[in-house]
Amino acid sequence: MEQKTRILALGDYCCSTGFATVMSNIMMNLEATGRYDIDVVGINFDGNPDYNHERFPGKVWPAVNALRMGAYGDPYGRQQFLDLLGTGKYDVVFILQDTFIVQDLIAPMQETYNVLPKKFKVVYYFPFDATPKKEWVEKVVTQIDYPVAYTEYAKNEALKIAPELGNKLDVIYHGTNLTDFYPIEKQAEIDHFRDTYFNGKAKDRFLITNVNRNQSRKDIVRNFMILNQLHKNGHKNALLYLHMQHDDQGGNILVMADHYGFELGKDYILPNQQGFTAQWGFPVEVLNFIYNSSDIALSTTLGEGWGLSITEAMATKTPIVAPNHTSLTEMMADGRGHLVDAGNTPSLWMQKELDNERLRPLMDVEDAAKKIGALIDGTAPDTTQKGFEWATKLSWKNICERWIAKIDKAAQEAKAATSTGQMAASRAERRRQAKGGK
Image (cartoon, rainbow, N blue to C red; front, side, top):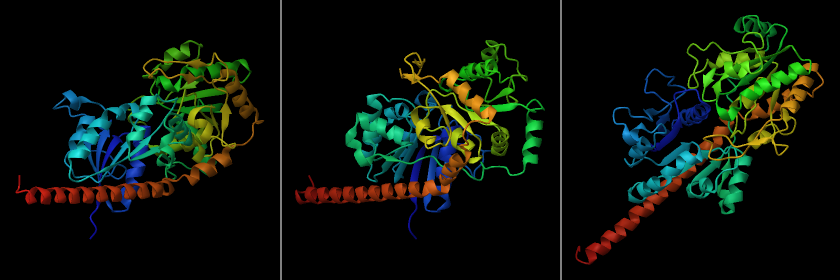
């Protein structure tokens, strides 16, 4: 019986972040083959064993070891990961994380590789949501055996800095979980959900939904700027639903709304905050109904490595309005959504705090209100079918065929390197013995 390939993975796991959704789907599809043994250092995993083991297969370690702390208090689990890697059990390392977090792992991973008799190869899946720093490419991406970018945008940004990467740098899109996100055919079911979930406050309103985390990169206050402009333009029936925590890294949404005199329950709605966190939102079946109940899905982000809410909304045939920048330009190309001007004038740029000094384009509020107004009036082109067809082609099952091939290739190379190392060690030992064992 062929021995299973041993995988050590590092990334968000056993939680409901975007990173964790991607990791979960890749690991589920690898697990389904029956050909891999998977260990995961789970970022944002609190260690509670009561998680969905089907969605998060493998043996899982929390990133943070509260009993040891020091280096083990790292929220990204780098020391825990290095300890496991040092056991010498693994054929393939799989990492899903930002480059500036992985940068500190490159040197110790290489040192570990050099001393272990059993060699491993590293597969690294990474996003860029803005122009990257040179060191992120030169000190991370170029040092990886199998670097894989989320998008062509990320690949091109990397190649501008390190053209020598060439064909070594691959692109694999995120998949769409079509069992979770799909159009609900019965309008009566949608109407019932919309009426009960929003407590009747969305009746006869044009519902604008933003499904994102309330963090500074998502520029949540811009949603209220757009809503204010819509009201000024005469679209008083526009209602904003922000599917996120009201008080998080991006600030307090209630205070943001107060700047414009907006009233909770009348001009905008928030989810019930009981048990709703950035790590644990509502069940996916509820989120699918939310997309289906919305008139549009809006993003005001300052940059995206991918933006799962975009393809999730596409899979439900919900129209999407998002800024024309970074990966969104690529995802919504060819009429798959309504792209809004962003960074189109010198004043529509910013550098925000704690963001590695990246320059980011701001969404044009007036253009956003104009394009949403056209959707309200029914004069905008229909983009939903093109978006739906594109998103459904990106099923995780299809996407993960490429990941399986990538992992297998890395494993074969690791085994070949191990064999080469063993032969070199054997030759060195024979030479040593020939010299009298000295």
